[in-house]
Length: 197
Image 1 (cartoon, rainbow, N blue to C red):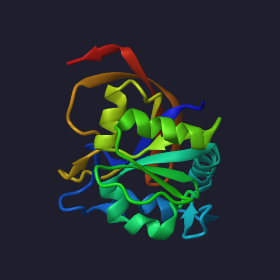
Image 2 (cartoon, rainbow, N blue to C red):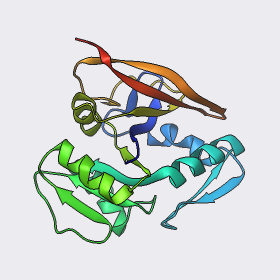
Image 3 (cartoon, helix red, strand yellow):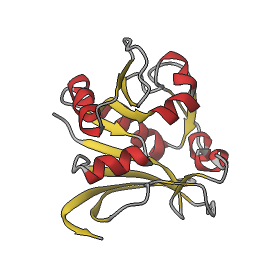
Image 4 (cartoon, helix red, strand yellow):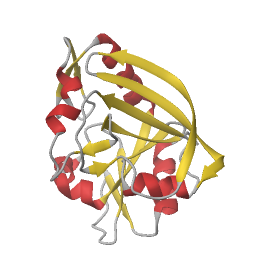
């Protein structure tokens, strides 16, 4: 089985969206900061990235075999109109499951079940988890190997934090740093043996 990571575009002050789900134009400006056209595997959108971000994003897409998301994100995106943009199987953790289909599996048994189902779909590739409560549950369960941050030079001042509140963790690294226009791509390993309250 491949690694499990959680990642997101985040502000300097740690938010993945601003108050009342604002700030996405700032958090995702790096997707249009360059001249390298890159179409996502589902074909649903094309970005214009810098060469550095294009190489980073291509590597992320090629290494990811499945995703785990929460029902809130699934509903907010209208189920990505039938398929996640990365074109991989997506497991939705929810208390209100829908009927499974070729692109989505709905589980209600907890984060451990969701990650296990995603790992079966991913094979040797990595499993990506969305931020927020899903990330917090997975880290608390000892399931996350790495945290991938797209750190954007903006301060949102409030909103939805990358991680839901809970105990703290020490990270190792960065194991990778990619500097680009309007974003710095960072990867860290999670150190479970040294937790703090």
